[in-house]
Image (cartoon, rainbow, N blue to C red; front, side, top):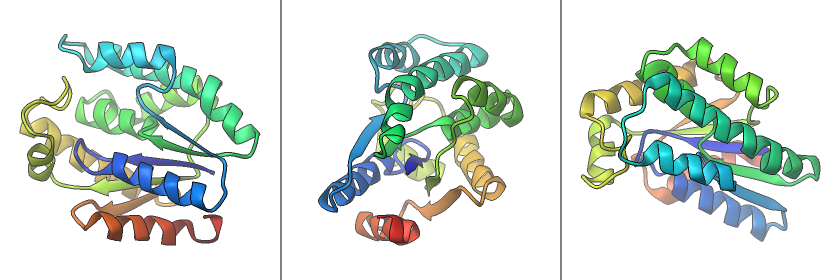
Length: 198
């Protein structure tokens, strides 16, 4: 299976990626853990560009995320799925839909079309969105975040709202979980949702 975790910065998704991967490995599964942007040499270089200090126009930002994603799918995700491994990814295309498509106003359909093209239409089997509000996100991240994390509260609010909207729009694939709940409770909800697959 291809499982992704999403949410506004500070939502706890990276912790849940690690917990699910550990659970799967303990059950004897072949697991590949990766992240976006990143996961490949190109992706890590793009990550530096995207999260560093320079201002980037919205479509350039979306295109850079898409380029890193295309490389990750081609070289890491697709080969792992083909050999029967689980892939657990910290962010995927729903991040672009939330941040660039909705919060930056580029349009969810337009950003989805770009990303489906560059990934060959590969969508996760299950996406867990950890919902926290903008204030909680800011409290957890603190003042020393990356370029996107340092954007103001109104942008965080738009991103948080975007993730809620995506969960409603794609209910067959996206599962919304309360990111304010204790870490173990969220992990249990993830395992229960995946059920017999784990």
